[in-house]
Image (cartoon, rainbow, N blue to C red; front, side):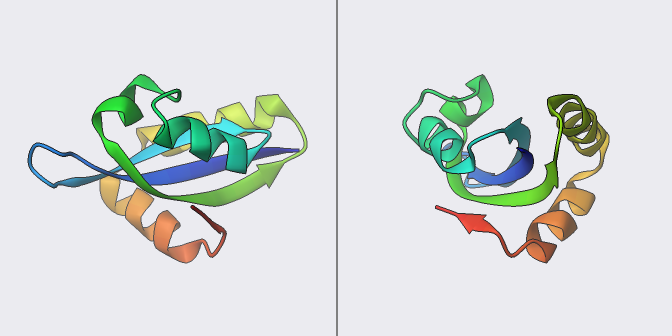
Length: 90
């Protein structure tokens, strides 16, 4: 099982909020990696605040496709997805 997730991040320089999208087969481990500086380059410079699982997929390929679609969407779309999800990981 693969999970597509969004992480709510804060830019420490100006306190602006942004959203990082990714996929994983282990959401708890992946969030821990992001919060300890072992995740994506983006989350090393933007403080990860909260992670929410957006969707689940049987295959890695389907999860990757969905991740790409979400990354191309606007910030307002990502905010709506984040708020709609109740699968919080912290």
